[in-house]
Length: 271
Ligand code: NDP
Image 1: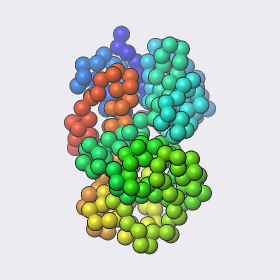
Image 2: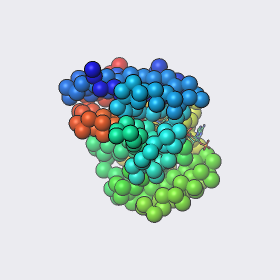
Image 3: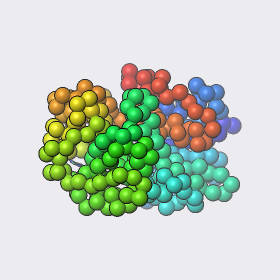
Image 4: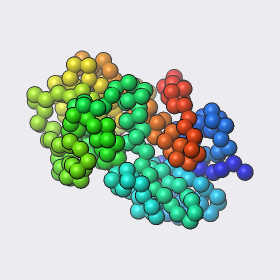
């Protein structure tokens, strides 16, 4: 029998994870079966335990259960503990180990696939929800010159500054603070693109040769990426590479084998 893995969420039918992991398994010759599990909104723990009882070895967790997965884990990695959110569960020796690979997925996509070295860069992170919380520690570990975080609801950005200030140079600034400041990397970690809109930032936030990165991905360029392009930015990326890179890190945690991500990203982009 193949080793069983799954992605658990609600909704889940749109998830690309089964496809990505099938491509990784094929590429690396690992005997893995990866399925999508719809958990009822009030029954995430039951779904997890049921999967463990059926022989599940690990699971990815997506919206809206990352917080519950954090609570369910019996052991957490440092990055999951800092993020207070878990997207990767490993079931081992009667333990549920929680990890968060979203941040390293973003960092690997920017540094390896987009060839932008984050060390000494000025980074602007827009948004203070779960995705933002998950990427702050891995971003600070790249030793940027500064990481500025902003959010529509400013209190949440301030809370993240306080939580992470011992890890590096992080500052919270309100959205109306960027009249004369520019950044080398501007990351949209809001869900505004889902509403086909973008955060209220001035064009000058993009430095010459800046990278504009939207964690969301879609067939058409997102509203944020269109705004960046109209502001003169040439280096644009959506979050499809992050999605594949976070999956690769989960695959590595479970199988101790690193899949090649570039062909998988190219395939998803082409379709
Ligand atoms: P949350 O719901 O936790 O947070 C949403 C954030 O977006 C908040 O900061 C919220 O601000 C802000 N926001 C929402 N609408 C607007 C708006 N119209 N203008 C300005 N700010 C707005 O979502 P997540 O953090 O979990 O996800 C954020 C995005 O990241 C999603 O698009 C998601 O798809 C993407 N993502 C991509 C991944 C990948 O692998 N590529 C992985 C994880 C997430 P406020 O606090 O004021 O409400």
